[in-house]
Image 1 (cartoon, rainbow, N blue to C red):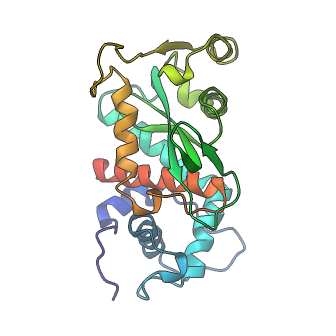
Image 2: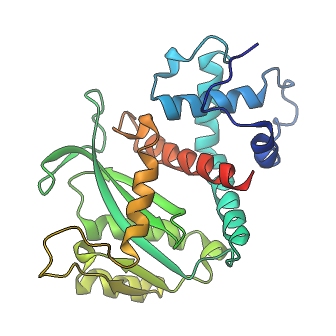
Length: 263
């Protein structure tokens, strides 16, 4: 019998998302592994920050767990589960399923020594690693995430992550306003957003006369979301060889947060 880890889903939480898990492929072998245990193993890696090979022995074989994680990353299953849960949380908060406002920000994180793909140097933060670009709604729920080299500029990364948001289609049909900070300010970026995405960009500036911490309107929401991500040890540093894998772990962190709110 497997142990009960803090990262495990409760039965109520599992039942909430079990209907979103894709069935086995037609004509294939019957599933011999318990999907509940597979999900708990994936969330264990996320929360504890361990290697796949270091999974405790009471979970399914690590190769099996990783195969499910990888296959569902490649076919978009994790993003689909994430999007469904986000809309359910919004409705639970008496909001429309599609947000009308979104906030963008970036966070530079150090990369592990073995990571070489999409790695750069952020001169402002004096940090070598990657940069996370997040778009969140006014509840702090992630719309889309982009993982890029830390050397990628705010406006360049902002365009790429907004393209992902634009491709969400009807999920963001009500979106019309994007909040940004001074790093995204500038006519080329703002004009591009208005011309291509048909959204208005609103810049929130820090008061020049204030040198201490200031709680900026709307801006604090995305900063709180970055704080949520640090609850997961796997996200305290970028350990992933592929940027796409790092993006998936961000979606997984949000899935875990949202399913706990709903169940």
